[in-house]
Length: 127
Image (tube, rainbow, N blue to C red):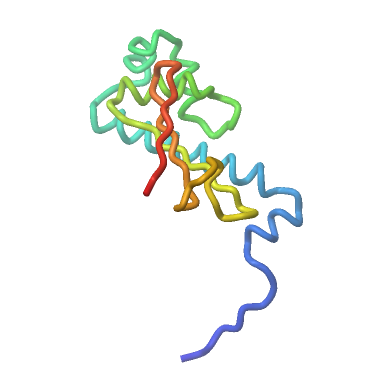
């Protein structure tokens, strides 16, 4: 079996060097979120028109939520969508310089934020 030597940096370093890391990461996250919402809608037999009606918005807004454009949705809009679909959001913020949580005193290096459709945002530390 042939051995492959690792030459150069990893892909994230390449994207950072080219000035594309932030944009590429944002697009990837948006696509994953849109795919998860679309799959939940499909499982529940919910059309874009029905989703828009439940969210109290237009079908065009639902298209933006489910589309590739990063600027198509706010956290509030995302919260309403996941609430309607019976889902929950977990965001994790990690300080890459120290590999510790952004919250002081965290032993695990990670912080989870659970956002609901309501403006209330709860934080909890993972142990």
